[in-house]
Length: 305
Image (cartoon, rainbow, N blue to C red; front, side, top):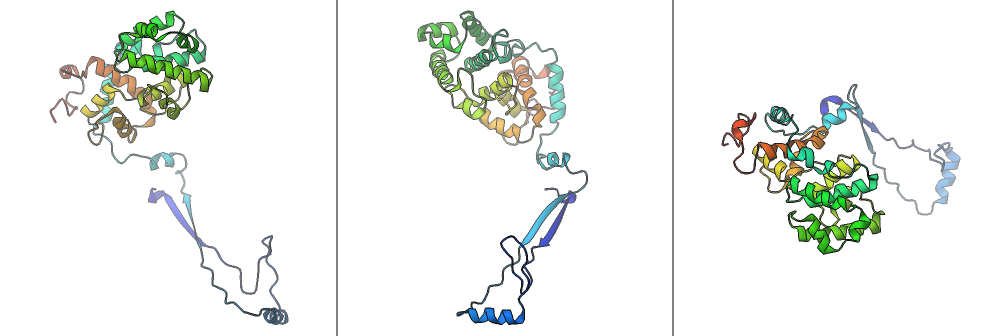
């Protein structure tokens, strides 16, 4: 807490004065007169010496003028931020201004049927995310087109045998495992959620074949809620190359936690699509196009640091 904008007020809770007592309603009873006090003393056969109650300190923090509202934000300000990250981000926005990367036309927000009911759209978003793991956007989009041509709903998937489903989604990565996960998850959605998808990250990641990245993207695309940063291999790789994590991270989930510690929340939704497209076009996994990158003088990896 910022000490400069906070006043500490200390008050002592006083105990009732000598000879006075509190009635059940909290009222002060009148003090005993001398004769009554003597009579009261005679009624007590084994006088017990009363312990002196410890005085309690009541501590209150009062916000100074101008602290309310923006003060809460100041208290949450991160203690560490990467060097030059805003300039790097602006440069990436400039390089991505054309919106012509595969993710811009074939990402999860483009794979569902816009004419379907909202519940069916949400199911299709989740399915496209399950298919996208370890798979190029072009391959995922092709599989979704074949599924939608047969009427992609919870009921239609449950009525499709595993062999046919495998043929429809091939050649997505790990397609055999995805057939099993899709069937299991779809059955759970029908039994527990009335054919809809869960509206929380915790429930989404509990579904077979759904990881944190898929869950956060599903919350953003299907429910319009920013629950966290969706980190895939592109975001994980670029964040480490730019030193956007305080220490090197070993997994996308570790990178997500590191980014959320300092990146302003209003950027959480934008950052996934921005970095994924940047990773598809410029900051490639192998032989990145550093000479064409506006961040070549700002990127530690490009400078060999």
